[in-house]
Length: 166
View 1 (cartoon, rainbow, N blue to C red):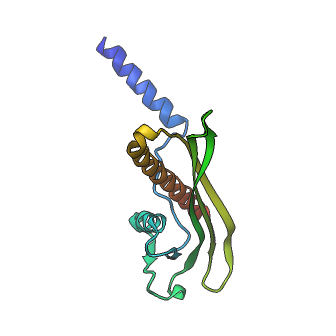
View 2: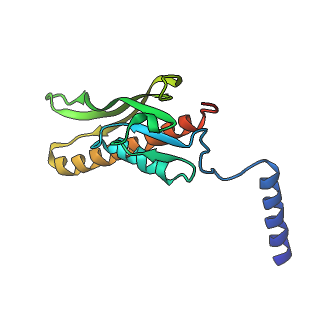
View 3: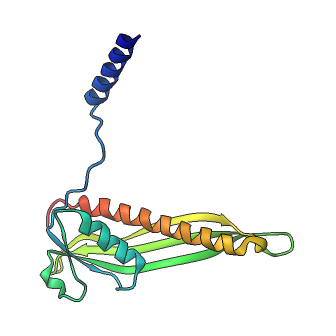
């Protein structure tokens, strides 16, 4: 029985290595430093700065420093949160909302050469609503916004890593 388990384990390991499977690795960027033009109090901007700073190869230039000290400049053109009513009850009370987070950005060199043209990333989630559980729904709403923000930051990181030359 032990021999069968060992053979099955070895066969599985060999088949996974032969198919090209590998764990996701940290992104490799074509630049060494970046200036992130987001508001200092923006939670999305702060998460983006933190995420990029964790990569060993890129230095995030402080927002108080001049933009031209960085190799590339990420201009955050819009960072919006929206809440839209999508469902009403028969008596006209709100039953469902749609939460949206939008990010419009572009990546350029300090000299003005555009590396990523103006792009918009959008995340949306639906949330039910109940007057009797308003506080719980508010907490759920905040969690959904945070989740959407994390998704947008990850999408943006992948787009920045796709830039091959400066």
